[in-house]
Length: 467
Image 1 (spheres, one colour):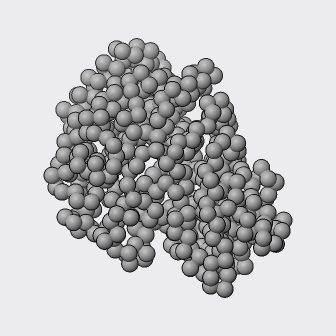
Image 2: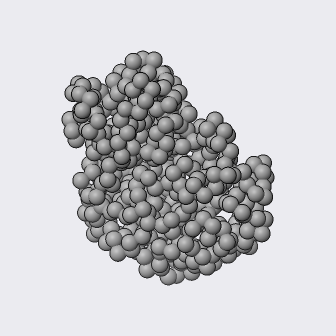
Image 3: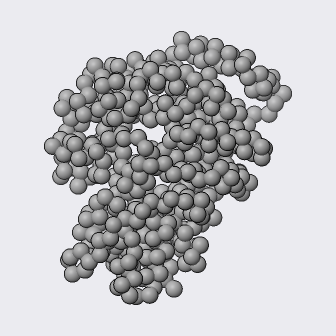
């Protein structure tokens, strides 16, 4: 029986903390469930020789990569083909741009859409050796004699997420990840999809709907993670964890009922939280929230179709801080038509909101998004095809700034905010806010005071966030 390697190609710049990758772990679990041999390889923690060895000991080599890194995936597929392997590309970029892989001559197949159900079907079809079986695989595309031979539409989105097996973390070297990450960061998904219409977001893989897992299975998986791997913190990688607030209240209740002690992080929007929810999340262990603000200018928020206001952004930040939760925000510079005045508006909102960390990217119209469709005239297609640029640079030719100026804007926004945030005035403000928080939440105030006096031991891991 053929063995399958599912590999994740490393980015040329690792901006986020190094942690496990969930996508290939889900696919590994799906193949295991069907009794098919599988190996997972994350190039971020392998050297070239280890990656080559993994390719050489398997028969079918499947790749996943973010858009800026597809050139590297093509290079690895070339190596795999030289070793006589069957090569396959999946993921969001492959789902909207199959040609770049099939036309390279180094990929035998592309598998579009969610693959937990179709990947095992594809591997079994290969094993059977019948063209008819391959042609029946939803989402499969392939060339033969230079012409498209198979070009099937992506399968319908998986409706019942509870039927998708728990990701095969046991196939990943979890302790190796933890060595690279002192927080011992672990990931979990509870939903797929996002109903909002931001123009820069590619939705081909997960859709515009919102599909959820049951609370019982979510907390079962959390309990498994906590008891098996002892993580320092768990990141909910859902696009908008708190879109349905009732389910998060239920999840927090179940975490507290089971007595699970761990810290966690949520991704969400400023208009999808309220103070009672934030307090409940904190009681259940939430210590950080990552917000996608993108801008503080109402004009730019409208251009990006964020369906947010600066007032909502500021209010959410204040509620988050009051609930004792630390906030990181993501911003975009260089959005279509952005002016220096819009940048100033964003900087004003940042100081009104006072988030704890700011990350800024350059606007990138990626294929398969509304921004790609609407701004073709401003996209340098040659630059895009040759480089598939990262979040720090873009093939979008801006109306008011060149690439050097955009990079300086990106860096200066972070530098300027950090100088303000760590100034004495803001330190004093945060001290007063913490004092008010501990008065409102005396159970945490007693713990903090006990640590200060040496009566309560500090957290065991240096990377963890104190309550």
